[in-house]
Image 1 (cartoon, rainbow, N blue to C red):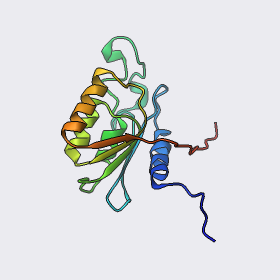
Image 2 (cartoon, rainbow, N blue to C red):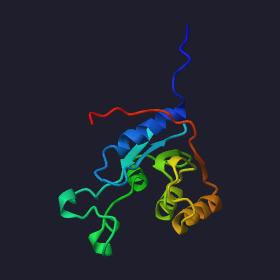
Image 3 (cartoon, one colour):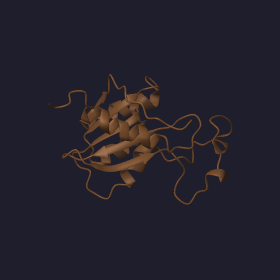
Image 4 (cartoon, rainbow, N blue to C red):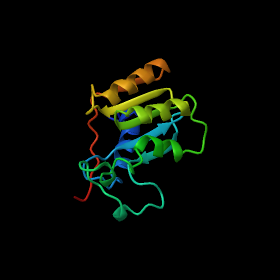
Length: 158
């Protein structure tokens, strides 16, 4: 008899994005992304962190203060990391991401050829960056949807 309580593709790929987010050293936001091609094969994974070659201890992790003393000018978001970590053509692929993309990431997602974004949380809903991202996705006909009923738990040793 076949098992019936297995996870869906959406849960599986969001689980990979969620697991990837746990690599982030950011104390306030851990974001992960997973790109799959049209054959449901993983072709890119990323999380938010500093660029390769930039030592984590040499840059700030703060959210507030003088711009250059915060993480914002230095951190690479999960979405571009996943795109850059891929070595294949992303045309027609999907991205699973734990947080709805900002407008800067939306531009990169569109340029890379990704056609659908499935996200878990939308904590910046209604902000100018969120509105701009949705305008860009709508204009480029990139579908986006929130994943409902995601119940997968990733166990850690914490």
